[in-house]
Image (cartoon, rainbow, N blue to C red; front, side, top):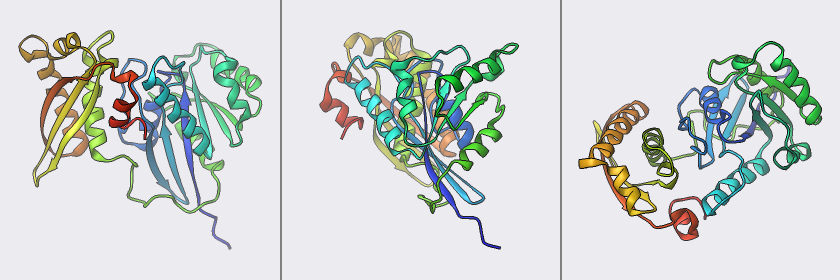
Length: 295
């Protein structure tokens, strides 16, 4: 009896902001690789998560939410989405139960050259026949979809069915990464993201969106990680808000970020933060290049 061929491929998770792409990826990979907050546009980068199973390897990509760019940072984020669609062997398009087809956003998915799986997330919030009706609706709107599934990334509902469907549509190919590799991103990246996550959770209005985190030092000793982070904002007034009275706001963020880092790295962390102003960094291509959004 011949052995089944190994399957491996790149699977891009795409959709509008806040539909649950990062929650889904973390669930599928089994690790909190993507930061999650209630705010839209939390994810700014393309983040890969790798899982290995019996006869397969899946390289998932979490991507920024699809939006109309307003400045250079948004343009860089949408380039990540474009490249992830070009690289993909399979695309998971996430929508919410009350979402409707919009040709400007979703028309391109009828023209994909790779299999598309339409995933209705947050199925646990549906009432009556809403989810069944929506599945029929999306089959009609995206007739080229290889499958239409309803899941809940939050509760785990139907994720095993989604995994089986993904594996079924993977191409035959040797693994792209070693079996013990979990992601393509370095540890410094996750340190920055975990700090940025706390900024998104603790501040309102424009402050989180105007903030970028750069790790200036990441030193691993035997029993402790020493991390120095520079937090950039666009205006002096934002710097004052971020720091807070007597440094209280920044101290709170630092404590919570350090806890998250210790959970993630499984090691004691010493975290030092500095707040700096980089005027209009979201609109300046040189700044974006320095922060790793463009090459």
